[in-house]
Image (cartoon, rainbow, N blue to C red; front, side):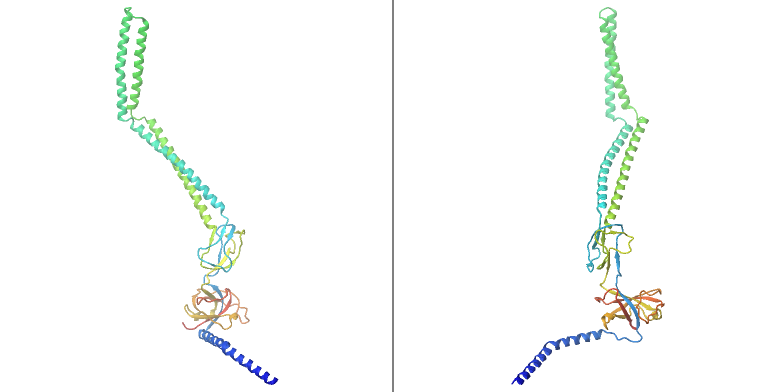
Length: 378
């Protein structure tokens, strides 16, 4: 009885194991088979006539050190390593209060200078008007009024003269006192003085412009014009200060030159930066497409051309192939860019740089050493 129960248990376990295999493991095996077929279909057979050369994975933009054009202190770094960024996005800000203050002060100075310039322009207009008035002399109505005023004094003089002469005769005959004669004489002299004053006014109004008056008027105009020009120069100088300070202020806003990702964040808030620094504030790159920089042996340079198909392999990814095409071939032979450290490597060989653009969405670590296989056909 006990043996029967043991056999029944074994049979149950085997049955359950079969169900698990067919229900769960079999579909997975099918999926793995499909994936294996797909991977097999993507693979290119490695042949003896293929050109094989070592290479390094890099972004299509290469690595860009984003630094600063002016020295200063970092107020804030706004990005983190691995962060995706857009072209023109603000990466960091330098301390910039000094530049803002310079702009505000220069604008205030321009406002003051503009008001002073308007006053100088008003003086210039007045000086020109005065010069015109002096040159043209009095208006016709003013001339007529001055002439009429002078003419009106002549009858007064004649009357005062007659009265004075009449009283002299009366005094001589003893009919009036000397005091009355003196009053008549004073009235006659007063009438003469009044007429003379009015005549001088008439002569001034009626006369042509005097040369010295015109010279004074011209000097006043030149002085006012000089003041206006001086204010114009001072305003332009302040505007230059504004443009310079604004340009420096703009340079304190560090923006990304490309769309990509932040590979390295080299500096932090509060650190000093300089245009002479070997490294930037951050390192960015466009990794939308990856590129492999290949050191092509000098013996193989005649076997490749732009557009040829290629693929790369890396030890870390086993036999997986990453497809691409030759995008650029160098124009000059040079030294190797890197060492593979393999025992069979030739050290003194000259190489030609070849760039292979991998297919979009290929994911590989930047700086990964790979082997490039270049097909002999397009």
